[in-house]
Length: 245
Ligand code: C5P
Image (cartoon, rainbow, N blue to C red; front, side, top):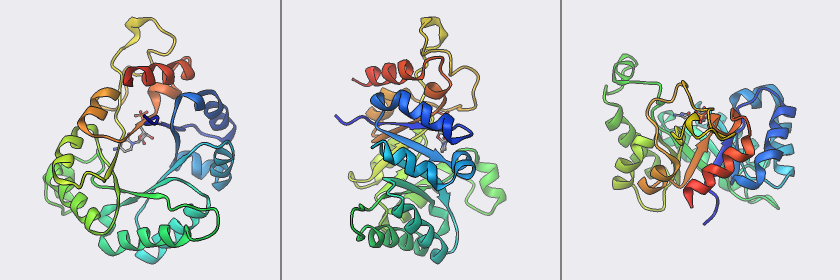
Protein backbone atom coordinates (compact mmCIF):
# COMPACT_ATOMS: atom_id res chain seq x y z
CA UNK A 1 0.00 0.00 0.00
CA UNK A 2 1.29 3.47 -0.82
CA UNK A 3 1.37 5.93 2.08
CA UNK A 4 -1.94 7.91 1.96
CA UNK A 5 -0.86 10.62 4.41
CA UNK A 6 -0.58 14.13 2.96
CA UNK A 7 1.02 16.27 5.67
CA UNK A 8 -0.14 19.90 5.57
CA UNK A 9 2.81 22.27 5.83
CA UNK A 10 0.62 24.92 7.50
CA UNK A 11 3.55 26.95 8.79
CA UNK A 12 4.43 30.61 8.20
CA UNK A 13 7.78 30.47 6.43
CA UNK A 14 10.06 28.44 4.17
CA UNK A 15 12.67 27.48 6.74
CA UNK A 16 10.07 26.08 9.18
CA UNK A 17 8.38 24.23 6.31
CA UNK A 18 11.60 22.65 5.03
CA UNK A 19 12.69 21.63 8.50
CA UNK A 20 9.30 20.02 9.19
CA UNK A 21 9.29 18.33 5.77
CA UNK A 22 12.75 16.85 6.31
CA UNK A 23 11.75 15.60 9.73
CA UNK A 24 8.56 13.78 8.67
CA UNK A 25 9.31 12.86 5.03
CA UNK A 26 9.98 9.14 5.69
CA UNK A 27 6.57 8.74 7.36
CA UNK A 28 4.29 10.57 4.90
CA UNK A 29 3.26 10.21 1.25
CA UNK A 30 3.16 13.87 0.19
CA UNK A 31 3.14 17.45 1.43
CA UNK A 32 0.35 20.01 1.12
CA UNK A 33 1.35 23.62 0.53
CA UNK A 34 -1.55 25.97 1.14
CA UNK A 35 -2.24 29.67 0.92
CA UNK A 36 -0.35 30.83 4.01
CA UNK A 37 2.97 29.23 3.11
CA UNK A 38 2.63 29.93 -0.61
CA UNK A 39 1.84 33.61 -0.13
CA UNK A 40 4.69 33.96 2.36
CA UNK A 41 7.35 31.91 0.60
CA UNK A 42 6.28 31.93 -3.04
CA UNK A 43 6.72 29.28 -5.75
CA UNK A 44 10.28 28.75 -4.57
CA UNK A 45 9.00 26.75 -1.59
CA UNK A 46 7.25 24.38 -4.00
CA UNK A 47 10.50 23.89 -5.95
CA UNK A 48 12.49 23.34 -2.78
CA UNK A 49 10.08 20.72 -1.44
CA UNK A 50 9.95 19.03 -4.87
CA UNK A 51 13.77 19.04 -4.95
CA UNK A 52 13.73 16.74 -1.91
CA UNK A 53 11.91 14.21 -4.09
CA UNK A 54 8.61 14.55 -2.21
CA UNK A 55 5.24 14.85 -3.93
CA UNK A 56 3.43 18.19 -3.52
CA UNK A 57 -0.27 19.01 -3.29
CA UNK A 58 -0.64 22.73 -4.06
CA UNK A 59 -3.85 23.77 -2.30
CA UNK A 60 -4.61 27.27 -3.60
CA UNK A 61 -8.28 26.59 -4.48
CA UNK A 62 -8.41 28.51 -7.75
CA UNK A 63 -11.74 30.19 -8.57
CA UNK A 64 -11.79 32.69 -11.42
CA UNK A 65 -12.69 33.00 -15.08
CA UNK A 66 -11.67 29.93 -17.11
CA UNK A 67 -8.74 31.63 -18.87
CA UNK A 68 -7.22 32.88 -15.62
CA UNK A 69 -7.64 29.53 -13.88
CA UNK A 70 -6.17 27.70 -16.89
CA UNK A 71 -3.08 29.90 -16.76
CA UNK A 72 -2.69 29.47 -13.01
CA UNK A 73 -3.01 25.68 -13.41
CA UNK A 74 -0.36 25.76 -16.17
CA UNK A 75 1.98 27.66 -13.85
CA UNK A 76 1.35 25.11 -11.08
CA UNK A 77 1.91 22.20 -13.48
CA UNK A 78 5.24 23.75 -14.53
CA UNK A 79 6.22 23.66 -10.84
CA UNK A 80 5.68 19.90 -11.18
CA UNK A 81 3.11 19.56 -8.39
CA UNK A 82 1.25 16.24 -8.21
CA UNK A 83 -2.13 17.63 -7.07
CA UNK A 84 -3.83 21.01 -7.03
CA UNK A 85 -7.28 22.37 -6.13
CA UNK A 86 -9.94 24.42 -7.88
CA UNK A 87 -13.45 25.41 -6.73
CA UNK A 88 -16.13 23.41 -8.53
CA UNK A 89 -18.51 26.36 -8.04
CA UNK A 90 -16.43 28.15 -10.70
CA UNK A 91 -18.54 26.15 -13.15
CA UNK A 92 -18.12 23.48 -15.84
CA UNK A 93 -16.23 25.62 -18.30
CA UNK A 94 -13.71 26.67 -15.64
CA UNK A 95 -13.22 23.06 -14.55
CA UNK A 96 -12.76 21.85 -18.14
CA UNK A 97 -10.25 24.64 -18.79
CA UNK A 98 -8.29 23.67 -15.66
CA UNK A 99 -8.18 20.00 -16.61
CA UNK A 100 -7.15 20.74 -20.20
CA UNK A 101 -4.47 23.13 -19.05
CA UNK A 102 -3.02 20.53 -16.66
CA UNK A 103 -2.91 17.96 -19.45
CA UNK A 104 -1.52 20.34 -22.07
CA UNK A 105 1.24 21.59 -19.77
CA UNK A 106 2.19 18.00 -18.98
CA UNK A 107 3.20 17.55 -22.63
CA UNK A 108 6.34 19.55 -21.80
CA UNK A 109 9.34 17.25 -21.27
CA UNK A 110 9.71 15.83 -17.78
CA UNK A 111 6.25 16.82 -16.55
CA UNK A 112 3.23 14.74 -15.66
CA UNK A 113 -0.30 16.07 -15.41
CA UNK A 114 -1.17 17.02 -11.83
CA UNK A 115 -4.40 15.58 -10.44
CA UNK A 116 -6.89 18.47 -10.52
CA UNK A 117 -9.06 18.20 -7.41
CA UNK A 118 -12.43 19.91 -7.10
CA UNK A 119 -13.52 21.56 -3.85
CA UNK A 120 -17.30 21.38 -3.49
CA UNK A 121 -18.78 23.22 -0.49
CA UNK A 122 -16.39 24.67 2.08
CA UNK A 123 -16.96 22.85 5.36
CA UNK A 124 -17.16 26.24 7.08
CA UNK A 125 -20.53 26.81 5.34
CA UNK A 126 -23.73 25.48 6.87
CA UNK A 127 -27.19 25.36 5.29
CA UNK A 128 -28.04 28.91 6.37
CA UNK A 129 -24.79 30.32 4.99
CA UNK A 130 -25.37 28.50 1.69
CA UNK A 131 -28.90 29.88 1.42
CA UNK A 132 -27.60 33.36 2.12
CA UNK A 133 -25.37 33.31 -0.95
CA UNK A 134 -28.19 31.98 -3.11
CA UNK A 135 -27.34 28.27 -3.23
CA UNK A 136 -29.79 25.54 -2.24
CA UNK A 137 -29.65 25.55 1.56
CA UNK A 138 -28.74 21.88 1.83
CA UNK A 139 -25.01 21.26 2.04
CA UNK A 140 -25.25 17.50 1.40
CA UNK A 141 -27.26 17.98 -1.80
CA UNK A 142 -25.07 20.85 -2.93
CA UNK A 143 -21.94 18.72 -2.40
CA UNK A 144 -23.44 15.90 -4.49
CA UNK A 145 -24.56 18.29 -7.18
CA UNK A 146 -21.12 19.90 -7.51
CA UNK A 147 -19.36 16.53 -7.30
CA UNK A 148 -21.42 15.21 -10.23
CA UNK A 149 -20.75 18.37 -12.19
CA UNK A 150 -17.01 18.04 -11.53
CA UNK A 151 -16.95 14.47 -12.79
CA UNK A 152 -18.91 15.47 -15.89
CA UNK A 153 -16.39 18.24 -16.53
CA UNK A 154 -13.61 15.65 -16.47
CA UNK A 155 -12.12 16.05 -12.99
CA UNK A 156 -10.73 12.86 -11.52
CA UNK A 157 -10.57 13.86 -7.88
CA UNK A 158 -12.41 15.79 -5.19
CA UNK A 159 -11.65 17.19 -1.77
CA UNK A 160 -14.36 16.24 0.69
CA UNK A 161 -15.07 16.26 4.41
CA UNK A 162 -14.79 12.89 6.17
CA UNK A 163 -18.54 12.74 6.66
CA UNK A 164 -19.18 13.14 2.92
CA UNK A 165 -16.99 10.25 1.80
CA UNK A 166 -19.57 7.48 2.10
CA UNK A 167 -22.33 9.39 0.29
CA UNK A 168 -19.98 10.43 -2.51
CA UNK A 169 -18.64 6.90 -2.93
CA UNK A 170 -22.22 5.77 -3.65
CA UNK A 171 -22.72 8.19 -6.52
CA UNK A 172 -19.26 8.63 -8.06
CA UNK A 173 -17.27 6.41 -10.41
CA UNK A 174 -14.87 4.24 -8.38
CA UNK A 175 -11.83 5.77 -10.09
CA UNK A 176 -12.50 9.22 -8.60
CA UNK A 177 -9.86 10.02 -5.98
CA UNK A 178 -11.19 11.41 -2.70
CA UNK A 179 -8.89 13.57 -0.59
CA UNK A 180 -10.06 14.19 2.96
CA UNK A 181 -9.04 16.66 5.67
CA UNK A 182 -10.60 16.61 9.15
CA UNK A 183 -8.66 13.56 10.30
CA UNK A 184 -8.10 13.08 14.02
CA UNK A 185 -6.65 10.06 15.83
CA UNK A 186 -8.78 10.80 18.93
CA UNK A 187 -6.13 9.06 20.98
CA UNK A 188 -5.63 12.14 23.12
CA UNK A 189 -2.99 12.99 25.63
CA UNK A 190 -3.99 10.12 27.88
CA UNK A 191 -1.57 7.92 25.99
CA UNK A 192 1.22 10.12 27.33
CA UNK A 193 3.16 9.71 24.10
CA UNK A 194 5.23 12.52 22.60
CA UNK A 195 3.10 12.53 19.46
CA UNK A 196 -0.23 12.97 21.27
CA UNK A 197 -1.83 16.13 22.55
CA UNK A 198 -1.82 18.22 19.40
CA UNK A 199 -5.49 17.59 18.70
CA UNK A 200 -7.16 19.10 21.70
CA UNK A 201 -9.59 21.96 21.31
CA UNK A 202 -9.10 22.68 17.63
CA UNK A 203 -11.69 23.75 15.09
CA UNK A 204 -12.32 20.46 13.26
CA UNK A 205 -15.72 19.39 14.52
CA UNK A 206 -16.72 16.53 12.26
CA UNK A 207 -13.76 14.21 12.11
CA UNK A 208 -12.96 10.58 11.32
CA UNK A 209 -9.91 8.64 12.39
CA UNK A 210 -7.37 7.80 9.67
CA UNK A 211 -8.57 4.21 9.43
CA UNK A 212 -12.27 5.14 9.39
CA UNK A 213 -11.66 7.58 6.54
CA UNK A 214 -9.89 4.98 4.41
CA UNK A 215 -12.55 2.40 5.18
CA UNK A 216 -15.23 4.87 4.10
CA UNK A 217 -13.48 5.24 0.76
CA UNK A 218 -10.95 8.06 1.01
CA UNK A 219 -7.77 7.69 -1.06
CA UNK A 220 -5.71 10.41 0.62
CA UNK A 221 -5.77 11.90 4.13
CA UNK A 222 -4.75 15.53 4.64
CA UNK A 223 -3.36 15.82 8.15
CA UNK A 224 -2.22 19.10 9.63
CA UNK A 225 -2.14 19.81 13.34
CA UNK A 226 -2.06 16.19 14.55
CA UNK A 227 1.39 16.08 12.91
CA UNK A 228 2.90 19.57 12.76
CA UNK A 229 1.63 20.71 16.18
CA UNK A 230 2.75 17.53 17.91
CA UNK A 231 5.67 17.67 20.29
CA UNK A 232 7.41 15.16 18.03
CA UNK A 233 5.99 15.44 14.49
CA UNK A 234 7.95 12.46 13.18
CA UNK A 235 6.65 10.19 15.95
CA UNK A 236 3.11 11.49 15.34
CA UNK A 237 3.28 10.74 11.62
CA UNK A 238 4.71 7.29 12.29
CA UNK A 239 1.96 6.56 14.81
CA UNK A 240 -0.74 7.62 12.36
CA UNK A 241 0.80 5.42 9.67
CA UNK A 242 0.89 2.54 12.12
CA UNK A 243 -2.83 3.07 12.85
CA UNK A 244 -3.48 2.55 9.13
CA UNK A 245 -1.63 -0.73 8.82
O1 C5P B 1 -4.74 20.86 11.07
P1 C5P B 1 -5.74 20.07 10.30
O2 C5P B 1 -5.49 18.58 10.31
O3 C5P B 1 -7.15 20.44 10.63
O4 C5P B 1 -5.45 20.53 8.80
C1 C5P B 1 -6.26 20.18 7.74
C2 C5P B 1 -5.80 20.86 6.49
O5 C5P B 1 -6.80 20.66 5.51
C3 C5P B 1 -5.62 22.37 6.61
O6 C5P B 1 -4.57 22.74 5.71
C4 C5P B 1 -6.93 22.93 6.15
O7 C5P B 1 -6.82 24.19 5.55
C5 C5P B 1 -7.36 21.90 5.11
N1 C5P B 1 -8.80 21.81 4.93
C6 C5P B 1 -9.70 21.56 5.98
N2 C5P B 1 -11.03 21.48 5.76
C7 C5P B 1 -11.49 21.59 4.53
C8 C5P B 1 -10.63 21.80 3.45
C9 C5P B 1 -9.27 21.90 3.70
O8 C5P B 1 -9.29 21.44 7.12
N3 C5P B 1 -12.78 21.47 4.32
